[in-house]
Image (cartoon, helix red, strand yellow):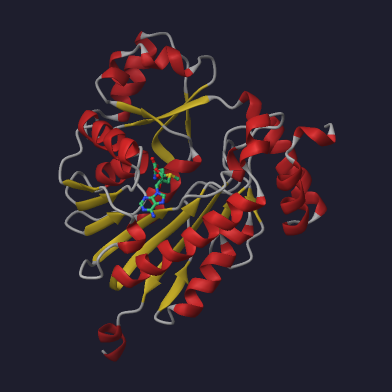
Length: 316
Ligand SMILES: C[S@@+](CC[C@H](N)C(=O)[O-])C[C@H]1O[C@@H](n2cnc3c(N)ncnc32)[C@H](O)[C@@H]1O
């Protein structure tokens, strides 16, 4: 692969973060991303996965499933536009979503009846998936600080039939500490280094040292506030679509030093190991966290699960 196809700053960060074998795996993934297929999620608030399979059959659109999630569909032979024309899309029975980005809500294991916060929610793919996974029975708060994106979030939630969601147009770093939540998803703003395709010139202009500095400051503040408003015994899932350790393990390790009552709990994805169409994991610097290597099917992604100790439980 020609050197210039991957932005220089990205190449440098990867070389500093990973060994030669992993770096070439990442570069191969960026290359394969050029032919990444369309993927979608059955919105189980409105349809069963089998209904979606029937609708795709009727539209003569070929699909396959993945081993780790019954709601995910991979469409090899069409572009997104073909899905926009389908009733299942117009009526919010499916949501176009990358496979990697379906993982954080699964790792969160949303519980019906729980108070759940999505700190950085727009355009709402993961918020709506969390609502669906809790059978629509969680008390959900979704924060988004960007006005137009907050509107898009509300639009998507309405379209997908997500009730019980309070959308707050706020900077989640300043969320009132009066709030408290059983489960929190922090899908943080990031460089997006896991989502690039080789030859993508815009990524080269976008992913710079200045952006990395800006997002890491924001990630730190968001993590602090998330761990402040997490109830004892509660769970936070932290995710980014970046493969830079500075946005991932380094953020988690630093946050745990500042929040001594919190600890990493292992991320386990049933069926995501070794099977066909399963993601490849990059070696983690913190045991139990997971960094998905960019590949043809998967964007590069990082997921960590953090729990806050419950002092009452320890005494028993
Ligand atoms: C990675 S995207 C979230 C994607 C979303 N979780 C999904 O699955 O559709 C990050 C979002 O967080 C928003 N954001 C960034 N900083 C924020 C902050 N301090 N408070 C609230 N929202 C923020 C951005 O505007 C952006 O919409």
